[in-house]
Length: 266
Image 1 (tube, rainbow, N blue to C red):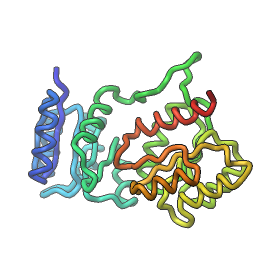
Image 2: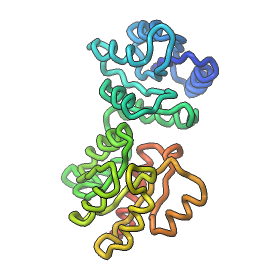
Image 3: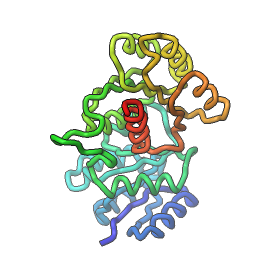
Image 4: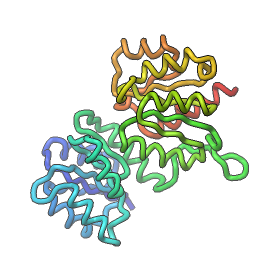
């Protein structure tokens, strides 16, 4: 039986694009144009996955999520939010209501949506790409990872992903704290955002590479910046990888982390 997807989206163009894209992939798709209709269709259609806008007529996405969260029958249906909003407070609220993924319309790519849909439907709660080892461990078990990122939603979902890998994750939101941690701990890798409160990721990278104790720690820059000048600067300062947030999935980030750690230890 084909997997069922409910799209709740009032943007006619976007809704139609998503509907057709998912239909072409042989999913059973239903499209609702307003919030109240969408909430009703969740119980009627019982989809395997919901694609949800936040700003909707009659009932907004938050209200839908809150109603869904209180209903034991539909509570655990996974949701991917596609919205114009992206403020940390809003993302935190969405996260608390069980949303699995969050996509910003300004960065909308139908192929990325399809990739995230497949990821959610193919393996449920399991972690795609986890590499099993003897004794039930995973490839990153015991590895120390420094994650410097002030986007709460991204940080939380990455933390959930990495927890399944049994690594030791240290998450901070600003550079000075990251540098202090790097002095105390022997990290296997550091992942740095560039746009951060206080000192930026380039400055953190520069200071890590200037310090004899931390210069050997491989660094992945993960940023919304993606101009050639930014990438060149990161490479010049010693970054091992430069990943653009809008162009990578969460699982690709995990794969890059594994690739860097194990190429270092090979």
